[in-house]
Amino acid sequence: MKILRFPETLALVRLPSGGEVPEWAESSSIFSITATATETSLVCAGRSVPRKAVHQKPYTAFEVEGPLDLASTGVLVELLTPLAEAGISVLTVSTYDTQWILVPTPDAEQAGEEWRRRGHDVAPAQPVAPRRSQA
Image 1: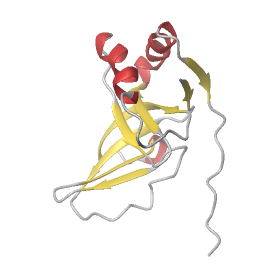
Image 2 (image 1 turned 90 degrees about the horizontal axis):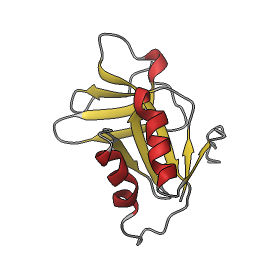
Image 3 (image 1 turned 180 degrees about the vertical axis):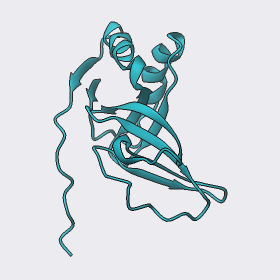
Image 4 (image 1 turned 30 degrees about the horizontal axis):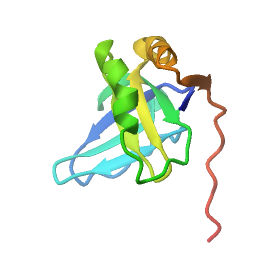
């Protein structure tokens, strides 16, 4: 598989249940909002997260080049097993087209090496500006 490494520093932020997305949350190569009955979490650019916000950073994002077939199996197992064996923690985000793996930034180089040892191609990503919908 081809895995693309993005340059931004990301953060995982915990907001109250039903919380609004704050103005300081900036988009980056990946911007994700997940809401449950007990919390709202977001993955966003780490540069503007206020110190008082409940958050963890820095994370580096890796994208599995897609689109992937939604019926494919074992993609995350194949990619996360070598990281688990190396003691690297991860966060994952799924989109319609692909999988994203967020690694603590101090472990990003080692994560890339672990994947290369398993035969995967790890390359720098070329971030693109988000497309705006034509309403």
